[in-house]
Length: 288
Image (cartoon, rainbow, N blue to C red; front, side, top):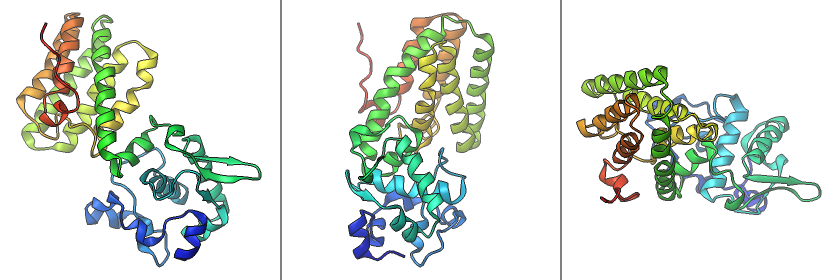
């Protein structure tokens, strides 16, 4: 394992710095299920709670997760060098694993690799902030409040427009699936099944964007899904379930079925401000 002194030279955080992470809020059972890195510093095996694109790929995915969290949290600041040999020693993984992990991080805009310069951390302005992994890492890190606000504002821009466009496309198949999701959410709320409710809610919003018939909007559906799935993102109907939020979902479906674009857009805006915590982020539409 690398010592604290060596970690300063390479830009890697020492074990004490890792203790600052808020990612350890997962239940003990979930943390125990995560494969450890196998070194004396057990804390290096920590990962966040939700699924992500980088996870589920063995050591490679775990290293992407660890380094990504360290960069996004600020433990590895901009322009800090990342020496592959030192990373391999620190995390006890092969050079191949390190090389592939750094390539993934480079594709996300988190690091850059140049001849005679090496691999360095890039500034926030270069990050792909729409990448689902980065959304998750920010939601669990020191920037979680900024991430919450920005996701809420982005949803406020995307989803009302998607609802308006979807009303003009008459996609009966998608409309039926949207209605099914509302029904599933209602049953899940009645049974106290938050997991099923959240999955149906995420499917509802993803389907709605697909129904808009705009491929560029559809490309952003992953952002909305990430916003609904990460802890610290905008509150959903399943976090604080009530008849009002479920009613707004149902009214969106009804407006789509009748081709009421204005009604669908208005219902979506009402849905996004149904909870006080969200209302502080995005104001309710003014009456005209």
